[in-house]
Image (cartoon, rainbow, N blue to C red; front, side, top):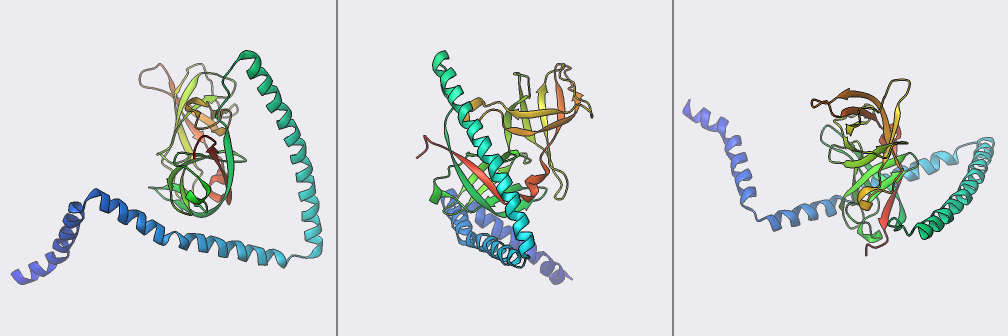
Length: 276
């Protein structure tokens, strides 16, 4: 009987020895091993992403000529609308530059857009993040904001040689300063606990009491631009419901994020121009 008990305890003793040995390893060695492991496994998601792109390419080759003609017409319409939007943006930038000169206001930090392909999505109770196919080789720094056509995607959390990890705006690790559209008072946004296959969401805190939100009158939450990380005016999400705080001085609210966050294939990293 005693021998049987010792045999049953052997796996736990082995685990305790391994954990104890790992705790004795110097921090520098742990950091090196972790970085080496990620760099060793980095080509796997990148290769899988490129295979998926190749598969999509060959599936498109099977479309009929009629479908390709229709797609070409839609693309031409989209390009025409984009060219008009570019002209409007250029005129607005010139006007902003003129006003900054007249008022002697400091310009916002400039960014260099770096477009990147999504290689892997990791959504779970612990993680809300994606891995993109660009890293140190394109000068992407830790903390750089990531955006897409619908607004904020998240922040760069880790940078490797050829890939980078982005914490999504739905992650509890992301906190942003925001404002309700049309209101200059800052509020605090943080990601929430999101299910793997549910609609992404977050929380807003320090919301003034006079901001009224109803199901028929949701409020758009945008970046405030404080700290120079995210440019101002980028969409974070929509405030759909509010409740009073315990102190009674502010409100807290639920923020519905863009559902496309779970299916992004292309994102844009805003690399600050003052970064090397």
